[in-house]
Structure formats: structure tokens, C-alpha cells
Length: 546
Image 1 (tube, helix red, strand yellow):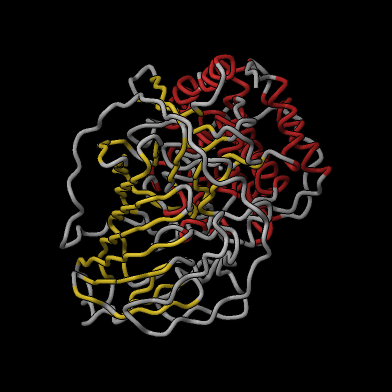
Image 2 (cartoon, rainbow, N blue to C red):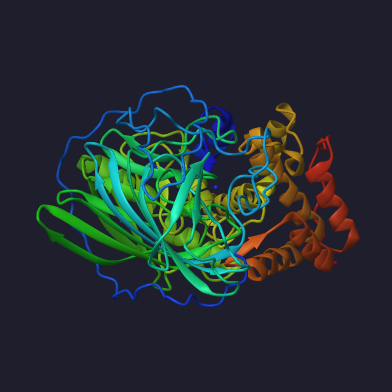
């Protein structure tokens, strides 16, 4: 994710000065006994959507108190759907310090103890969503294909709001109850350890966005704004629209099937493998064949047209832009997005091949104050299409998406890496000195008295001076200390060791120690944990070596 309004203004000024545009898994588990369904080859679509009218911009509502647990039943009580825009009744993300999750609930995250779950590894999610944009409702069936890591008498899934109608485990009806944002499933018979199993959940209602303590600038999850539905989940919001093991340490492949009124487009993460129409509705089937954290899954519904470009090695880039743009606006938007192939080529030279089957950007016809690196299809408003932020979300495909944080307290591994790599691209793209760009970042971080990025609190999850600027300076200091060759060795090994999974700061420090030695580790630790920020970045970096 990249925040650009308010706190990001100083860095935006730098980016705009150089912009030519007009306008942030565990090891694979054995295959499940019941495999996910096969998918057909990809198809290419270019049709534009026609106009439609849906709900206006969402309203602001105060966060509610936590509802009491639902009673055990195979039919759950109706969720609160009092606001058609999906805001009223929004849950507070379960990072509450007042209670610890029961065994099985929670993945052990230091910031979000209630997020994620234990006792199983998800292999695949199959999401089937029937969406009514005018009412902002979904009728969904999510099937979770998983492997148990121990005997499971109770299965926990993360789900906020929405009405659950039925739950089955391996086809047999299961009892369930709701507590906080947990769907607690009790199978008819315990699931033995080490076997594949499936959980199917049928649910419906108005998705209610999450009031997450780490994201003070907006509620997260399922948005319905100005005639467009889109999702921005980081870190907890995906549980607002589908049940899951909602933590980046448990990645899975996805099939996402979205049915909408026929005149609308539904885009998602992965590759479009099928599109069909019947009875005034159109169904889009998207397949993500690489492991993906739940917070990076996306749904986009609205009036969009698809444009394609490609890298020099043939990687498909499919961009979705608003159909309502004037010819001049369309040309400016496509010109802004034209930097993407060159940015991918640049990052591939630094890091290795792009991690996924496709890439692209979905552009909203309005501003949202941030951009989001949803896996393979980044989200931008109409004011973030500048090279620095386009490159930032693209760099996340390597660091953040392919390599995800092992704990949300490790957020600097996402944002610092994406921000620094975007600056390296900006320097190359604009022919400017990276030292001058970093001098501006240093001045801004010192002026804001940026806290150490390795010691942030959950409320500082997206603190711009710390998590973006000081983390960027941390990597630049390491780069200068070890030199170009060794720094690239460190980056590439960090990526290659953890691609498809997750990593922590100790994991990264071990690689720094291996290639850069104890002085490099001490330097890294001082930037990550020391309250003091160095006053200068003067002096040439070493040529290379340990």
C-alpha cells in the first residue's frame, strides 16, 4: 500500500518533479484429498461496460460495540445490514488487547492476535460471488480446501458480519457459532491430523468494512463508492467479504467467480479464464495459480474497459480504466500506465523474473488517498498514477506479495522495500541521483522525528515517516555500506528464499550477516531500532564485498 495524501505530500513533490505524466506461505502442504476444480485456458476480452447507476459515496459511521456471540446453530442470525453502503456496524479488527483468542483461533500475530487460525494449512479457496451492486449485497459460497496439521474438533475461520446460512465439512452439515470476527465450526466428526478436508460456507448480506486500528485513514475491506465496488483489505479487511484463514503466513491459490449485471465488468486477481453471459447477468472466472495472502485478493466491479500491453519478454499487462473517461483523459491515463513494462523490466534485472502470470492496474474514476498492491492487479485512484507510486505497487509484487511479512509488526519488510525499489526505478527512469532523492527523504524523516521502523506499534502500521521513509533510508544505508553487488545479492537471496511464503526481520538479518558481515548487521539494527536518526548520508558507499 502507498499512502499519498497528507503524510505523503513531501515525497509526492519529489516524484512529481521527475514525472512525465499528466495527471505497498509456509512451505507448500500436501495436496488436499478433494482437489480444487480444474480451470480452462485464459481468454482475452476487451469489451467496454456501459453506464449504470449505483449507490453514492459511502457515509461515515462510528465503530460499533462488539456483538455478543451467536448461539450454536446450523442457521446463523441475520447480520446487521442497516447501511446499504456497507459502513454501519463495521467491526473493529480483532487486535483487542482485552482478551486472548482461544486455542485454534489466531495465528500468533503480535499486532493482531485474533487474525488467522491454527490447526490447518489452506491449499485453495474457491469463491463464488453473486453481487447486486445497487443493493451492495453478495450471495457467496466459499469452499476452503485445507490440510489439517493436528486433529480438529473445532475449525476457526475469520469472517466479519454477513449472515451465514449453512456450513459443511467434507459434505456433512456442521454446527457453527459466531464470536467477534470468528466463524467457529464444529464438524460432525473430528478431522484427523494430516488429511485433506473441505469446508463450504454459504453466506449473504451487505459487507461491512473493518475499523482496523492499524489503518486510521479509512475503513477497509469491501468498498462501494461512486458506482464502483472495489476491495482494499490490508491487513484485516478480506474477512469483510469472505471467510478465510486471514493471515499472510497461510497463503493459498484462489478461484474467484463473480456474477454481476451484464453491462458491468468484474475484475479480480489472477488470470481471467472464463467469461459467460446468461439471463441478463455476466460471470467472470479468475484463477490465481500462485500462493496469495488473503489480504491481497481483490474484487472490482464497475464500468471499465480493458487495455493490454506487454513487457519485452511477453508478460501480459492488462489494465482496467474507467469507461467514462473522455478521449483526453483516456490518453493521459494510458500514457501514465505506459511506464509499467519498463518498470517490470527494471525490477526483473534487479531481482529476477516477475513472480506471477500477469500484471496490471485498475484505475478508479475518483481519488481514494492511497494505492494498493492487490496481487497481479494493483488498485489506483485517479491521482496516484505517477511513476514513483506505480513502481511502488509493482515492487510489492516481489516484496509484500511473493514474500509476505511473517508478522504484521514486520511491515517495514513490505513498505520499506517497495518504497526504496521505487526510488531506484525513479532515479533510473528520470536520470537523477539516488543520493539526492535519499537526502530529501532523510530531511523529511528527521523533520518528522521518525520512530524506528522495527519498533512501531499497531497504530503506526502505516506511519509514513517511519514505515516508508526511515525504512527506505535503512535499505539505502545498507546499500551504501556493502556496495551494489553485495546489496543485490542480499535482495535476491531474500526474495528467492521466501518467494511464495513469508519472512521476518531475523530472516533478512541472517542473509545480511552472510553477505555483509557483522558491521552490516549492526548498521541495519541501528537504523531499525535506534531512536536516533543519523544526520547525514554523506560519503561514498563501499565498492562491494563483505
